[in-house]
Image 1 (cartoon, rainbow, N blue to C red):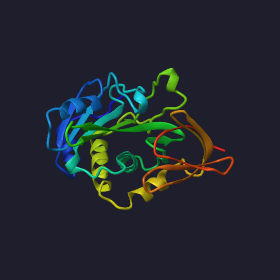
Image 2 (cartoon, one colour; image 1 turned 180 degrees about the vertical axis):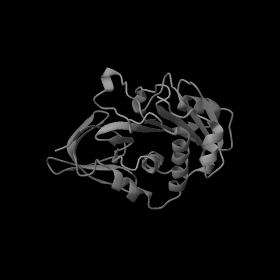
Image 3 (cartoon, rainbow, N blue to C red; image 1 turned 45 degrees about the vertical axis):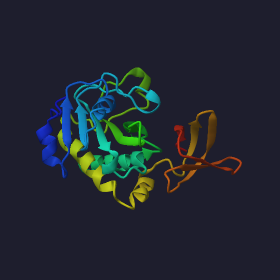
Length: 254
């Protein structure tokens, strides 16, 4: 692949706001690096981007495949007093989709509740929100980890059937796309109507799904997303179940 080299100055050129930017050839995880950085108590937002992650992870600490030069692996470290904290995962999903659509206008992207972005029913991006407690007053920082498969082709066997990339182009301007994601997030973070956009993009609504949440296992139709971001599922006995966490393990396409 010949994707653009990650470059702080190039990312800055496309940004609409000022923030610290750190770029790396390799880290274990951009989210983990953000956690270590938070110990220094920075008072401004920081963007951490790496060409490769040796131990990238998503929800439930699952591995996030992060090969060199074919994807975007980034984290935003945000002081709690500089960000609206409601529904950050959902906001980051919408921001990522909108940014990707700016660059890949023909891609029919859909969100799978709550944090995955799909193309042709395969995952091309995942979002992970984490928080850092200051030990005194509660949460001091939030971290938004965003991973995108841009033109990855060689996936491990165990995820070949569920993972894909957004393009087969051999050249992608990663610096611009990273900046577009950040720009869209800061716009959406204060928008009142972003949830309507999330619902519009969510391919889970109306589908028959399986959801696992701890010991609960529910099969039914995804009916709606409530204002707090929770998912309502109607089971086969017409009972309604509301979840603000959990994982959609299967979506029935028919």
